[in-house]
Image (cartoon, rainbow, N blue to C red; front, top):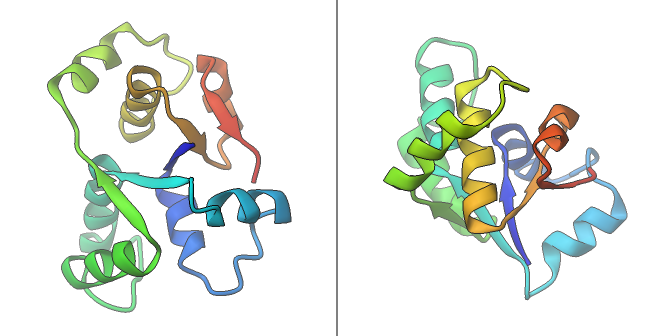
Length: 130
């Protein structure tokens, strides 16, 4: 299974306690057959929020994100032209541009999404429970 983590879910995954996730979800995330993905849109969002003081990280994003991608066994997911163009076809269930891009990636690449934002289910994607 290929799982696209939204920004918040990926940050929660970095917390050693991982209290925000159910046992079922943790089991799924830890299966060797599960591919964890983090969109470059999420990394962009993290970088913006860090730079304007809305997100505190233990280190600058260029060090923190790179190190934590490796330790959390998460692969960055590139943003392709087809993803960006597909956003225009999505209904306006959600106004956040980062989340809309994640939805486009999930639709086109047939990815399950791990997010606390239940509004994303309105797009008909496979939204995993926390």
